[in-house]
Every structure is written in C-alpha cells, then in structure tokens.
Amino acid sequence: MGRINDPDRHFPGDVGVRVADTEAVWEKVFEVRDKPVSEADLYHFAQKSMDNDVSEAAIVAVAPGQPQIAATTAREWAAARGVSLTLFSGWEHFIRQVLFWASIPTSEGVQALPALVFARLVELEVSEVGAKLWRSAVADG
Image (cartoon, rainbow, N blue to C red):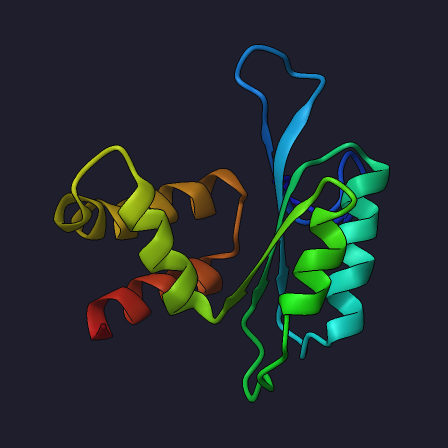
C-alpha cells in the first residue's frame, strides 16, 4: 500500500499480497470501502480481480450503516471464473480473521497490533493529527 491513495495503479484494490517466490504475481487483493458496498460492487471487484489474474479477492465493508448484502450469488459467480471472493462486514470481522490466521497466538497479536499499526502510520507519513487520533483510539479502547 502506498502513501497516496491511487486505487488500481498496480493491482485491483487497496492492498495486494504477492506470491512468495515472484514479485510479478498478485496472490490476494483487498479493497477497503468506507462507503456502502452493494452486490453490484462485489461483481465489479471480482471482475477486476479476474482481469488481473488475481485468484483471491476480499472487500472489507466498513461504512457506518453498511446494509447486509447477500454475497452468495456473487461468490458463486466469481468462483466459476476462478476468483475466490470474500466479504468482511466491518473491521471486527476482518481483524478477528487476521489474528486467527496469524503465525502467532491471537493474544500476542492483539498486544502487538497497536504498535505495528502506529509504525505503519509513521512509514506512510500520516499527519501528526492522524497519529494522535490513532494513539487516542488505542488508549480509549
């Protein structure tokens, strides 16, 4: 993920994971949406992933008031075209999965996460206001 929001510059989505043995192939892509996601958005993202030879695609729907959407049909459509499509409804669902699949125990991941996020904010040159907001959110949480 770069410092500047430039969607789809090198791959579909906001965050891409490369195949371990080559930098030329994207294994997974994630799109974070802070506006409501529709069923049509799922098809569109799956199509973009397919067009870029990405076989694993996920949308993290974090908009306040995100309506429940039936993703089953879109997932089946994507799977028939070689794309595994996942929808995470909210940050909590996504973060719980990340912690579960991490190489360290969840309790250790929960403790390490705030500092890791802060380090990434610094790396991305987030404003001091943004950094303070993160520190405040972590302290209040």
